[in-house]
Length: 195
Image (cartoon, rainbow, N blue to C red; front, side, top):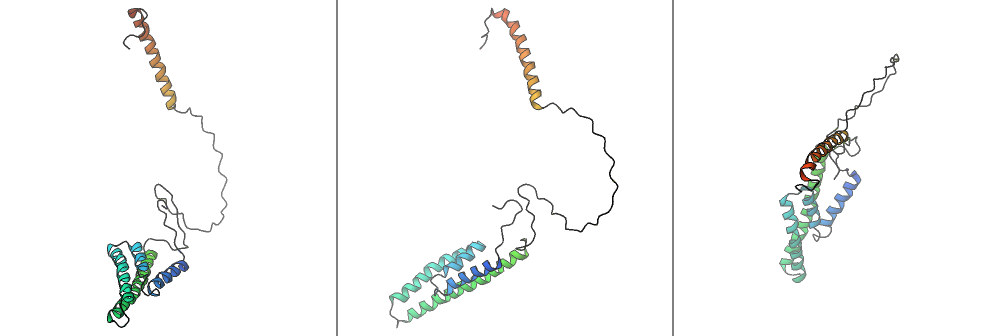
């Protein structure tokens, strides 16, 4: 998407912090109702099957816990267990997201990705280009002017492909004319011959 040799644009540190706060808050402050949001974010970042399983399993677990809390009376100990479980799910998902997101961004910063505001060399498509030389200060030094070069003798360009094809077609038409004139006497003016 970004071409050969070009890294995706890096997010600013403010954007990364805001996203961390929002995803962590979604898991914990919703009392576990949106505990799947930080887990899905981790699954998108890492792409591991275990993260996808955890994120999809958190949905029915939180729904089931809230169903137990809403359907049973408050005095039933099952409601306390279900509410504790959904709160722990929210806490776990937020903590797991924060630890994983911080590790991922540290690995990207130290392994192969340029710093957010550092110099980059965009090569576009094709073969990688060498990096430009570092900036140096040039000290002007007087140099004698170079002697004038005599003009190069004009060179006749090699015949183009079109000229070669034209010459071959001329030869072929001459050959066919000679061939047709030899056969005109044999066929009594019938040019259709074997066609």
